Length: 242
Image (tube, rainbow, N blue to C red; front, side):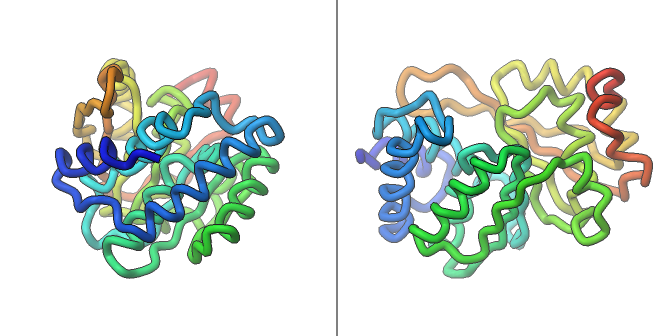
C-alpha cells in the first residue's frame, strides 16, 4: 500500500507520520477487509490505495482535535471499525500507550470481524460490542464514561447527538465525521444539543488526498450531565428529533 498520501495528510493536520508498527497493522487490516468483504458486507471500497485514504486517513482525522489526555473511546455504529480502530492503532503507536476502545455495532457479523481483526493484528484494549447506543446510554457502567465518542456515517446529527452524547463524560468530546452537509444538520440540532448538556459544535473542514469532496469534523464538547430521560427509544428519536 502507498502510505505517502496518508503521511502527507497527517503532516497537513500537524500530526506525526504513520509509525511502522501502525502501518504494518493497517496492511493486515486492509488485506483482511478486502478478503472478507463479501462474507461480512464491510465496505464498497476495495482498492488497497483507496482503502488507505478513504478509510485509514479519514479515520485518523480526529487525532488532530481530541484532547491530549483522552484515553477511553467508544465508536458508535462502527461497522468495519472506522474510525475508531485505525485511530486507536495510530494513537497507541504514537503515544506509546494503550487506549481503550469500545466498538459498538448492532450487527453481530461486524463485531465478529472486529474481534478477529484485533486478534490478528495483536491489538489490546479493543472491545467489539454488539448492541445499540440508545440502550447502552442507560447502562450505568457505560453512561458518561467515555472521554471521546466517535461516529462516522451513521445518522443525521439531530439523531446522532442523542445517541452519542449520553455516553460522553462531562468534559469529554463527541466527534463525528460528516460530509459538508454536517453544518446544516447541526443547525437543525442546535436546540437538542443544549438539552443534552453539550456546547455548540466546532467545525473543522478537511479534504482527503486525491479528488475527494470536502468533509467535516464536527467536535461537540460535553459541558454538563445529560438528563436521565435521554437517550429515548430509537423510534422516538427518529420520529421526534430534539
